[in-house]
Length: 150
Ligand SMILES: [Zn+2]
Image (tube, rainbow, N blue to C red):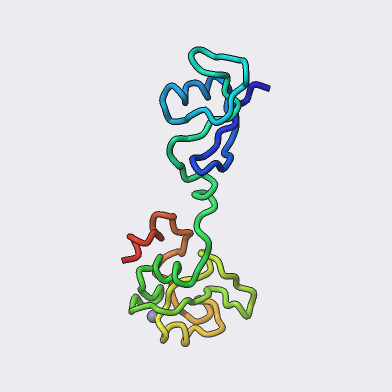
């Protein structure tokens, strides 16, 4: 078992890499030795057991999972515009209404103006004869950062 554990800069474990890979990370100075084998040397380094990244990286699973759902996130994602009529959208509409099993998910919710939300009521857009201007999707983390909210 020569695998080396890689820690994020905040000491959160990320994954395991080969010793060779770990040494390359040390050479490139993207990682530092966090824990080494007591009496073993590899090249100029103590044999690493655990290395720690110099800079914090945002892990991939965060991207693939996407940000958690929130009402304000939905309104922000949709540019504060109603998904049906593009008027100012301040409420959140459930495409499949909650009373009929619709969930709080990015793909089931859109920003809507008060009028459209009332008009749609307990119906799907098709039943209400209303057309979504776009297909709602999971926003990126970047799109929900405080800077992007301005
Ligand atoms: Zn509207």
